[in-house]
Image (cartoon, rainbow over all chains, first blue to last red; front, top):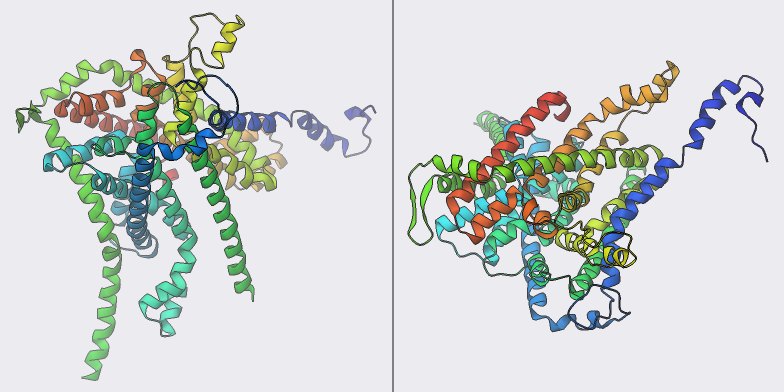
Length: 289
Length: 294
């Protein structure tokens, strides 16, 4: 059972084996560290899921008192929650649609053409990403106040499209950087109209990037608190409702909603990864044929 | 006749092609112009106005407002920068070994580990922060229990201290540091390390002279992606902090939405933005990353 000391190793390998052994002994440090960090990241998530099942007696959800599914059953009894969810979904859907279309167009211009003012355009698109959210929110509020525009669903939507555009451009650009324009030219040479060439050649190729950008835009929009707070007026979105409902401790409904969104989000993400992997395999298979 | 048509055709096509990038950029560019540039100009003008919500505002080019807010909120300005720096440095220390492990030792578990890393962030920002408030509560299940057993003093608290605010920011912005570091390390050419080994470099010096310099673009990107949002953040200070941990974002929010002192709020926003731009430029110079980022 005793391990041979490095000096026991005979032959020319001895010199090579010794340092490998020494590093082997410390090999566990980094993986264990990684595990600890991941556990730390999941700590509040675990607490959230657990306390959504807490059978509380009074208003306060502070200590564990027993298991119940009641909070899941009675979600519909909170009209503000339902309204805010509806608002958030409407805003996110609209913002995702518009920002994905506008941002993808910009990304295509920036990756497929050489033109004057390109680096300026790149910088301009990057600026909103380098601006703190609170400044973006405050500046939009300044504009809406100056214009005398009532704040509500529409102003939130306008703001969300704005901050999503830059994220979409960056995401789509990253996925279309190596894109080969000759394929589209080949389609046109073979008699395809520009639109047909775009639809049948370009779009399928950039689609994974566009989908990733749309998912990101949707997630950012649903989750946005700061910019929305400045431009919401009296309108409630889901994060605003959560904040309002949690002035004194976190009510179980917030935990329940967080858990549901978490489960749905993770499921969708895993599903899309799986779909993209299959698509990727199909493309490779087509190419090899 | 026929020749002129043929000659005109490619020119028209060329013109159409030359125009194409601009027409693709136009709609999105206009959107950013109207809802990013115009608001900034509008805020600049508001910061130079005088008046109140009741009497209305008038553009008087009063620059004094800027000096006023600097004097009034210097503590919050300094505190925000300090917190931002501490968050960035803490995240570098936490995330570098993490990204390194996933990139170099992840093997076939790489994608799964990355997914585990971002999974907690499927829960909304505001809920995540509220759960930390719940965990760290003075008499919550963690500290309350410890107090019952006499493990910590009765007046021990983490909430409302800088530790809670910085901790919240560190937690919330972790992926923004970890992912750029991972990308930089992952795309590194491994044969360079073999070469260093062949040239009798120790593992430490190979790390310091090959891996670390090559990961600097990731360090740069990660630092910006965590420093900028944490300096401007007010949610963590609002939920986890107290009166002695207010940041400049809290002041902007308060002045704009509660006190309705628009000129002051606008001036603070501009100072924050200017400070960040100057800081980023200096940082880029110091790291010599002009080419690295391009």
